[in-house]
Image (cartoon, rainbow, N blue to C red; front, side):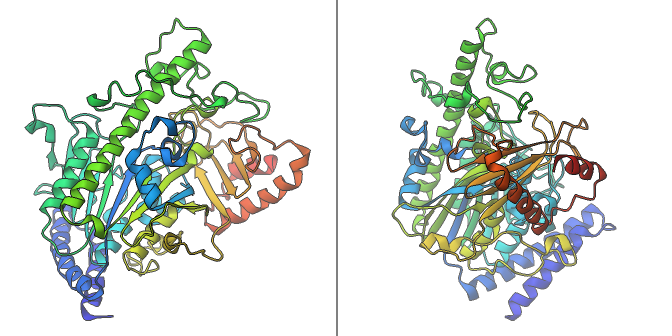
Length: 550
């Protein structure tokens, strides 16, 4: 290790210790962090000069952009051409068609991205909580690798994104129009704000404003270090508000419905009504017709059809705004002479239910909610539109980005004696971008949703997704998850044979032909749960439920 690298690691440990020290006042902590931050930038430059990271990395994440709402992934929306820019990147780069999040909700998914850990390890299992600077592992490690780092757009992790060299982030979920940004400044977080619309006569949509901020940062940067820019859109999160220029997009188009919008078949719990919010009137507490102001005078069939059309048109208009702004970003990089030396990664924090099984929102382990889009394009990525079919998890994102940056994904523990920060749960899939097969790659993915019956009436559950099957245990308890509703729901199982039922229309858990499959998957699920370290089984309530259900 060079002297500069050694000093860099020492400074990181000092910074981490300051962040965690309970006795340091906020002002003192900020002063020390400011000084060590300046030295980190200085030594990062020397490390970069020695290691010469080869490329810039532009990481683009949308909120709730389902893979099946991207033309390149095929499906019923592809003929509508919602994403021409992303389709081009997929046709020229690499598309992953089986990439899954491990907890389909905004805060936990973003925490997993930043830490490389499952929710039960990084501590952000629900929408409640924050990720402090010393746990913002991805930003810290990229700075160590010699990158100038920036976080622009939706952050949604509570604490200041202080591990980044530059940040300009939305206030929580943020507004669709005329958003306020938190920026670094002389006052303590979060009291330095900027509202771009204050300097404009016209209203500004968040997708445009976020892209404006990223382009401005790219144009103003003076560093000769490569950049790592995390550009995070708010769109197409509900409640959907598109920029005015898209108001008539799809106006004369009938958006295709999924067959299981009105014909649920054998999907869901056996012998009891389904859970979850709906497009139709099925859920009287909350449904998309209420969100879309669908006339209540319509009969049930017409109400569902009209609600679906309004829902999807608003959603896809927001998607088009994302795609057009990605094109703006790429043009800016080309104008700056940086496009040919940049890797572009596009993904979303999770998928989204777009009427499948009469569901809205995410949270479920079902394919449309659990699956994330993942497209990689640019410098060093072979062209030709390759499609990879391995089971990728969002715990793999951090080690892959580090690998692309020329850093060791294993690395040192950034949090000093903080044991929770010592282990990454994922692996780098970077070799797959060059067409390599990774021997011993995972053949199963773990999923867990904790936020029991909150907001969209989804019971807490965990499950396993293999190449051929999906087994889910809805244990129906809030346990100690902050933000979960305290009312238990009955425990039940769901099992889907993905080989002949990829749309998960037939729960075969009670089918005697699948008895051996179910028994085997239950044991695999327990073993996987133990392997990933999700050890809440000592809870007496869950043990009682499991004993009865298993």
